[in-house]
Length: 568
Ligand SMILES: [Zn+2]
Image (cartoon, rainbow, N blue to C red; front, side, top):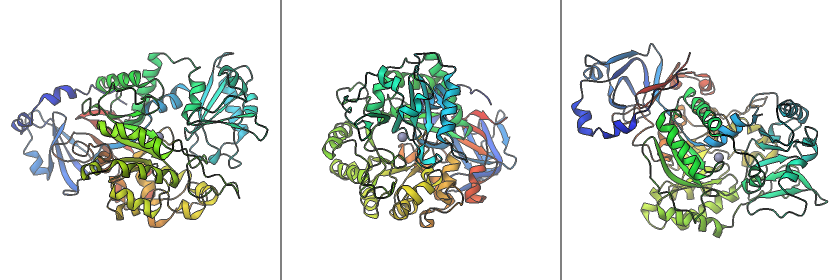
């Protein structure tokens, strides 16, 4: 793998359109000799592509494109590989992934068989041997909905088996739940009489004693604020590794969907700005301020500040929890355990959510609200309806993250408001069986990531990983959207009516994901005038069985006309 060359976008930006045109006949590079999947509806395939100064200058037949060949033009024969637009991953927790997968112990298990509580304790015990007394044991990625037995959960008593002298903080795979031992509660100064922080919850048993299970970020902060911040070098190395995970999967544009969540907005903004421009983080990034870290009293940033490499554009608000964690806000009770009255929980009243969103909307920020359950989606749509008072408001591309189990009426309403949902499409795969057979029941589970219904309503939508919630791998999301097969044996299709064509599934990781990030005029398709951001893959996904698209390998990734990854 190459550590990339610098993205010298600043210099490219200085070239005017006229200069680029006058340089025609001097293409830097021409790609030919393989399938070219453009994701441009007007010209879906081509024989060759020319690029110059980081941009695409011509897409067409080999003879047309060769008209731009000059004496210094490099010809790249794809040798039967397929060239596609670089993938757009519009919902990543870049810092969350750096912390969870690189700085903390990563316990995520997306393979079969599932972990057990014993195997989790054993893994944590091994890890704890490298941690000194009094220092934090921090880990990520346990998931009761993917644990054997189903929904077996860590508690303070269980974590005390790992250590009673070292504080332990383990984040659930969903990032909405965490587990702590008694030492951690002691260090955070939390007792049975400590009140819940606003928007968070410290779970207690029937006798009013803390269980060690805590919900949502305001509760996590009680512990995170007691941990030492890793030094700058370690953070930068971890971020660079996240960048490598992206380019290895062909991602060329991404978003930090909750800027400020770990180190505050100032530090995280400065790090992303520096690392994207230096090429240490070799993808374009769009930043969404996390409302918990960017309160309404702070107005130090402007929407749109930045450039095509790194730009701040939105504000992200989290309105409910996780459906597989039984905390997403549902209209009807969960189906698990049988007879439960639990309908999950909303983090705000409708008025509170409106009061958070309205000032940011008026300032010109793109509003992004995390809503998993149908009760949360309803609340968010009600708030969006109040924000959209004139036709231009519906063009601001209001985002709903996850939009996991919308009703038909909610989809119609979202379409009218111009909402651009983003599906964590791994819900159909890793969690499909758990939702269908246990947590939600068939009717609601069949509504998960209702991609075909959205297309019928003329909507744009994106697929994303929500990394670290699921692994960064756009071709896998496309495969999941087009197949909807769940992972646990016996594999079944989670509502065949919501499967989409391979073309539509690929749109959700290219041009429509770019649309969600308001970058569809710059990236997301192979089209003259757009940036030369490509994924070169070993097989044409349009000619592959939907389920097997996930096995396609990315051989090279190009950003701004520069190769930033080559498979060794
Ligand atoms: Zn997320």
